[in-house]
Length: 234
Ligand code: UDP
Image: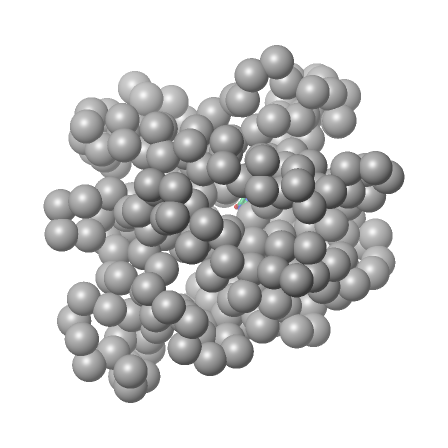
């Protein structure tokens, strides 16, 4: 598969066109940003690790009935994906209180949630990705009713699958962010599933093994990603 023109460059990934109009190459960079890109840095080897982690997790959820954009791994930092018309909603699923939920509702980080909590954020950097609800989604025409049903079902199903997958590897899935898109009339899971967009805590020590190590200057960032890679793919 040949790499053609650059279609889009994001904070952690680049999308390239290919000789097939339905397929893109997703390239994983080492760049890391946080707090709406106010903080920038590099996590050495992140792109290589995230490519492998995402490929493994996409394949796992696809095997269990959640359609994704992932086609195959092409190289250390590249995967072949189906071209999506991305839906401008960040879908967050939470199992344990952390991050913006703790702040917004005044809850202690680490508190177990009785049932998974689903949140939507409007994908708009200029606005700082504000929290939105179904009513806003309809108002902004971001997705249709049936599309939202597919997205909500998909997000909860991914949560069940990944919670179990990580648990067997000694990792708590605290929360994570998903993005979905349209491809030939179907809703597919897109973007990535990696420690950049998930909170992952060691089940025994509760040590953070994700991008919070970068966000909060906790050190040993590369080591944490490498340990996730070892447990997920090893
Ligand atoms: N998240 C993400 N991209 C974003 C915002 C959040 O991948 O732009 C992920 C984040 O890594 C975490 C989950 O979504 O796993 C929930 O994040 P939260 O709303 O707590 O925001 P934060 O406080 O991390 O900004």
